[in-house]
Image (cartoon, rainbow, N blue to C red; front, side, top):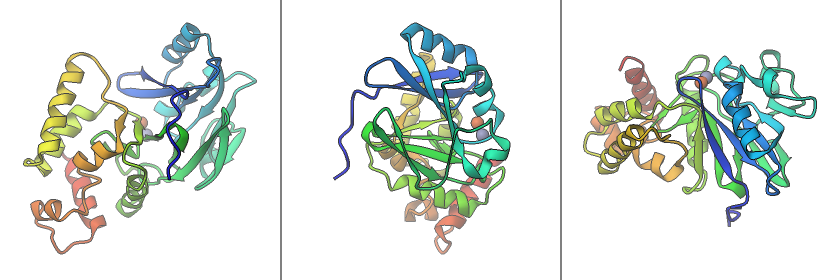
Length: 260
Ligand code: ZN
Ligand code: FE
């Protein structure tokens, strides 16, 4: 049985820079918060101040500047900075270095580390079963996935497959607002997927209102995200790749998106 979702662990989505997202995970007593990624200090600090929160932890997903640029500005001497041991040489100083399957405590709740290479080789995700949420940054994204800057298509396919095995109601808290263009691309792969057409329309509505399209749920991604669906017969058939491996089909979808 998966643990039931702990509604006391509130997650706050914070738009940063032009299209990044940071997330605050609030402690059950409402006094502290952990930040997932630090693209920009001002919007995060404003949210902390508005809610009267102390920043106790910063969880880093990967080394790109738009995810770590504000760690130095936001961390105090009391802030625990957590990131991938494998990338410690290119991350801000870490107080806790973690790797695949490591577990650490956050506000009395278990956080599970998942290695999700592909976008970068040291990219990790943070899964919090009690919150029913996974923080994926630039691995699994809403209707998309990160570009393969350092890893291989095989690595990213493995990473996405691990994430796809989490419970369907898991909230996918990803790193960027790319969903509208991801939807346009997804429709070129699966023009006849009704769930995708509905989601693309909902994404357009949300963006027209200036609302974020994240978090999504894993079930939504499984039904609509072409990068997660590379193993399905109908997707392989649509790409004329019936005899190919799932990873090969994923690689082709990623290649098409790169030039979309
Ligand atoms: Zn990145
Ligand atoms: Fe990024």
